[in-house]
Length: 317
Image 1 (cartoon, rainbow, N blue to C red):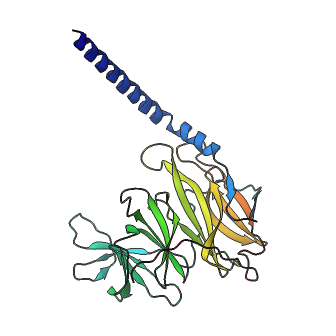
Image 2: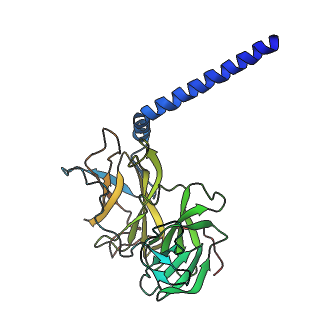
Image 3: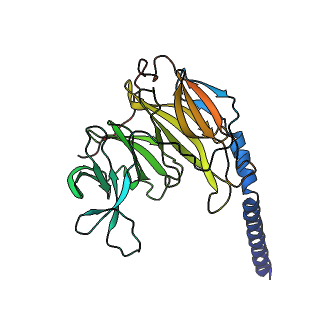
């Protein structure tokens, strides 16, 4: 009887624990937006990532931005998704059923004198008309699996987002890859969902270089549909004196998600959208940040930036 008593107590404890767990999950679902908002408010609004960078908020009377505000991109577009037939021919269009023998591939337009590229199965090929040509690089054994996103930067670099080999189903990471020798540099280990908001490039008039906004981590305000937002936006610059790129600053969601960058009066004018999904703060006016760069760093066509060492790797080419 004593054994039955302890078995009953054990079942009672397990039942109470399961009940409390379901109550916790239920309350977490109900108050998810409020809990997430507290996390967003605790984050530091702005953090310079380069010594000498000064950031000042600019007052304005602009109304809230439209959802997914997208005023334009940099001079090099992201790759387009095409289809590759079993016969090795490229076609535009989308797969309409699971057993469609055609496979999706990424087609990246060349920048400057660079050739157009076709990317699939972790490998990169020259585009030869409407078929893959010479193989340029083989990433199939690392550092990442597949190509979740491929984006152009300039004639020196392009971006690849993919799962890391050691975590094939983990968080997507972002690399920059050289057009010339296909060496790669890890930029970010924990991207925001790249299908929702891939890295965005800007080439402001008067600025000698390319800027890239990288969206990092996520804040969830609910489940399904438009229910999350990037937790941080990192602004990275590629200039003649910073050809490998250099991070300038990081904004949290409280400061706004970076959606546009201009060059005005010797400083970067960053437009950031602090609106939250499914929240009382879901439609807020943008915040404008004036980013002054140190004299030795990226600027107008008379003032460029200095270099910074980065850890790089190589693949077989």
